[in-house]
Length: 328
Length: 248
Image 1 (cartoon, rainbow over the protein chains, first blue to last red):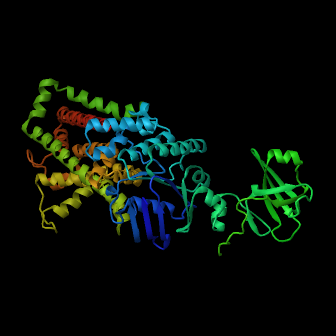
Image 2 (tube, rainbow over the protein chains, first blue to last red):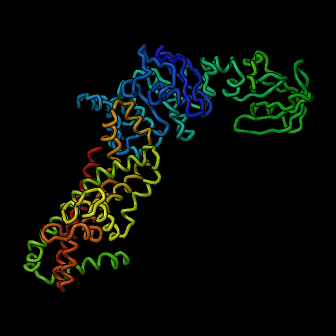
Image 3 (cartoon, each protein chain N blue to C red):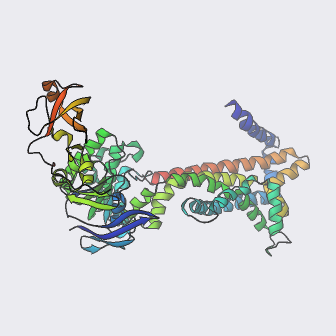
């Protein structure tokens, strides 16, 4: 295990940011710390980096006890949400910073900087100032700067949070490819479940200062251990008292399926390629069910407001097992 | 532009024209006279010294005001402006009662060059603090954290990451501080005693010349002060550009 965190607690005044957190993050993998804002995931990342001290508990990085090491001695690369660029230095100087601190020779530094700028596709911008770059380019520069010192682990705190949706998508695909190329143990914090599902090898879901579940994207999506994890990783709706994903519900215009429950479409909303339906069931408990169908299905079945329909969970579907309902 | 001309350019030119009445020989005679040249030298040297002190202490004070948390910080933040806001003659009185012959601190700096230094340091204190403080407030903590995680210790981080961002502000504050220093009158006349050749400063010289009806000579001294101010501001600008370029 590359990073081992055991029994870490952290309070800010009365606010409990981390409550007895223990988790192992595997070597060479891309791990996402996923959770809502204020859930403690950034605090955990900052504790790993040494930018924050844990009140109690230990952090081990590649077998070395690191709990009380200052950030300078941990050999971690850290990438911040708002780039943290050294504004008065050129892109090349930014990337060279860590190498110059380590007193590498000039020739070696230049060579390494050129390689890294190549890697992040910023070679032609080497002499620009950060202010002359776009947000996405600045974040790639920050990444190159963090990688320059050959860190044991690379930590990214909401790295794409400040970018617009399109650049964010491009950059996370690029991060995945970069990780496959560089193979450094990487941990990134995100509140965007799509980002985590798409990029990460492993996801640690953190909520209210606690680890909710650890697993691969498939494990989390298909076998969530709690209502929180299920609802955080994607849309959910209730059908017959069980949590189901809206796209895992079949809609019929006649009572074909014996499990089908009768109801009426009360609302129909088209969002791009999908159509969201609200079906009001005849049964008085949990009357409203949200269903997502494709545009093709909607047209094929002539679904419209007020139509009488029957809904049933798609047969053989994942994630319909009754979930342990979180207390409170 | 017209406003600027009326307010600044025309009076400046008028001073130069008035000084030109003397002719080159007369001009030289005035400014190289022992009493005047001593006053000019004292003014420039003490102003430079005070500016240097302000650059260090002002930056440190701004740092403390922005970064540290302590009881009375808000009060200190307001009090910093007092030397600037006080009418200079009041500042002079304050200094006289504090560092004069009847000093409660037992420090008698009256009629010495130290008095000139103290007075200038007192009135120019806010300049660097007030120019650096807002810039320091805009520097994100994550920049320092980034430097730390790249292995830089606190001193290196300050020298290589924070300081370069502060240089323009420090330079601006230094220029203001120096300009105020060479022009100061009110705060130092009481404490310094205006001893010719020892503690008399250029602005006092100017006044003396005018009181004696020698307006051209007063203008000559004024013209020298003007040139010095210009030279220092240009020099500071060059330093700033040079430092800015070094980072790239």
